[in-house]
Length: 158
Image 1: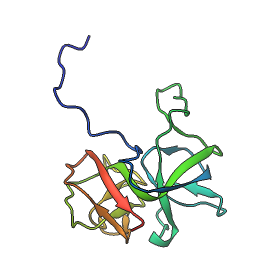
Image 2: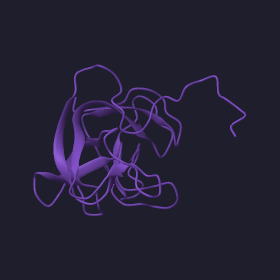
Image 3: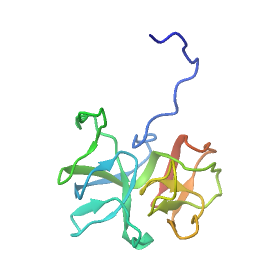
């Protein structure tokens, strides 16, 4: 039973559209399972997207997967886009993402292409290359300070 309650609401959740500013979103077919709020790259065909892999480049970046209440949880309670399912991807705008490290406005935006220890997964965002495990996303910026492991606004496609 929950016995303690925060007086502050969470900032939001991964893949949530941040606000009512203009944004663009397209529908692609998922190539493999893709969690909400992750950066995705072009898949095998231009009509597919997938989580980035070690050989992915910034030029292949297509956007960030949007949260959808239409996606059912699996047996483990995880809601994510499943293989070959329609996947909403923001291609320009402001979306909430989870960050791996502290970020502030002015920091660079990098997309993780290869996991590198606990708390890291392909498609997450950070402020540096982590040697060669992340690629720089140009025309993107952090709009606020976000603590490591927190969720905050990423604006891209500027």
